[in-house]
Length: 275
Image (cartoon, rainbow, N blue to C red; front, side, top):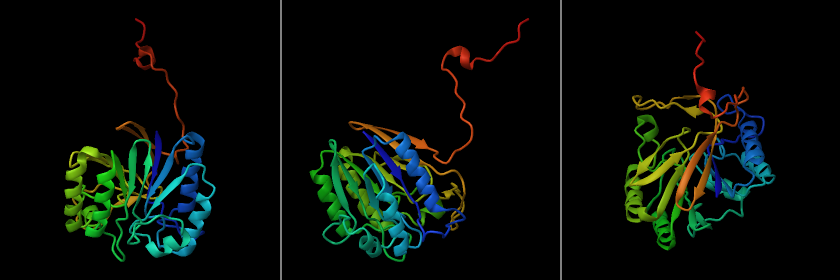
């Protein structure tokens, strides 16, 4: 099973730039690479910050792009999005009974669970008791599960970034669920941090994916200001077999040379001058 993970595309009104970049061109480039090299993927999952300023025109531009996509796309919202505006442009989007963009689907033998961790007028993540109750019900009925959300649900030991992780109270509540159901959770995937970060949390592997726009720099000392720049973007390809996962990072914007070499010992051995 192949799954594509893209995040933090930060669409604007067409013609407007974001952070010095053209987010529309970046996503077009990423999707073209997916179509050329990974058209056999079962899903593209975009984990939020679909837009930068949440204008209706930005969502409409995104809808136009995604209507042409071959691989089925699953959308989630992030702190730069507006839930009501998003749903008005994507009215077919599934939500839970309370109107949060929480939904799930069965892919193979696994439940893919997509979470809404946004709260109006804050960049920090929220996942209160009502949303946790929905997640618990999904985990209870799942044989095994894979969780996607926008915000990092754990501290990643970058002080400035951790200011806008899932807030402490909700992080604790979320952790209780993870501890209770970790035997059936294969992986946690998120965006938000604009960087590839991998580890384990509650005994569960996790990964974050770079943005298609600007990337963050892992400053482990700065407490307030986020560091980042126009470093190369990427998306992830998950290769899933049963409960095993391999993740490849695809630097889709690279247009420099690629060198081909064999794998025999002599191909990599250091030449020695004849005596």
